[in-house]
Amino acid sequence: MRGTLIVCADYESLSREAAQRVAAALAAEAERQSRVTLALAGGTTPRRLYELLASDEFRARIPWIKIHFFWGDERLVPPDHPESNYRLARETLLGRVPVPPANVHAVAGQLPPEQAALSYEQELRTFFRLRRGLPAFDLLLLGVGAEGHTAALFPGAPLSQLVAGEERLVMVAHGPDAMPRLTLTLPVLNAARRIYFLVAGEDKAAAVAWAVEGKGALPAQQVMTAGELLWLLDSEAASQLKAVRVAR
Ligand code: 6PG
Image (cartoon, rainbow, N blue to C red; front, side, top):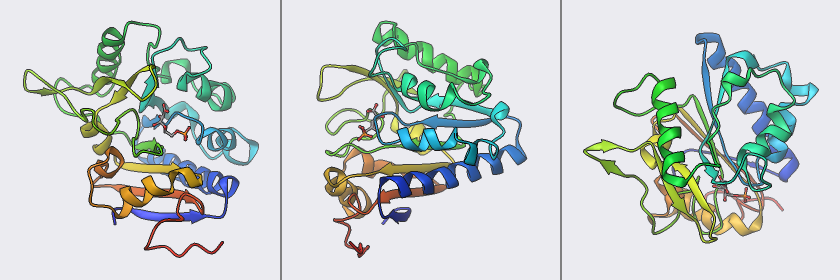
């Protein structure tokens, strides 16, 4: 098994546990550095976590002026599109806490795919002051799809890309639907100091069991870090894990 498992009774308690841990991690990092990098997950699962981080109970724990927001993946749509991961974060979190606009490093989803990828990659290289090498996020939040994808790294698709011997940081990706996406590549995900998976629901139980206990090659199974790897699960998402007996 890779990483630490935290199994919570339901989606609300999972989101609260995640909020506690995300707030503590960001506050700890802010004690030791002036800029803390957080890469957000998209989809629907993190919605309640983001709302809680912006709530009176948690917002004061985080020095927002130090937090720099990135995305692990983004749908290539305009920022106000219902499918935009940026829009989810803006509505539930960024629009409710005092984050300086310069700290929000969103994907230019309205650009043509390859142009958006190059632009986001340049943003990463500039921010992390990287001519070569990989950016190391202080905290990366990820979800898992029912078939084992994470970020926008899908089964059967490339997980990384070399261009002239140089690791790409960002790739254009296509999921099972027709929507084009941008994703951080697997080497960038794995360079993060802390990786927190947030997974809820029975439909994810098989993917979680494969990723945590399986020996396959699903994208979510390839995520690992020399730092902290945490699986934050509700009881349904954990229900097929052998290592965990979930009290119903
Ligand atoms: C996205 C996400 C993706 C997501 C999983 C789970 O843009 O869709 O980043 O990787 O985390 O698909 O999505 P749900 O949380 O909606 O189940």
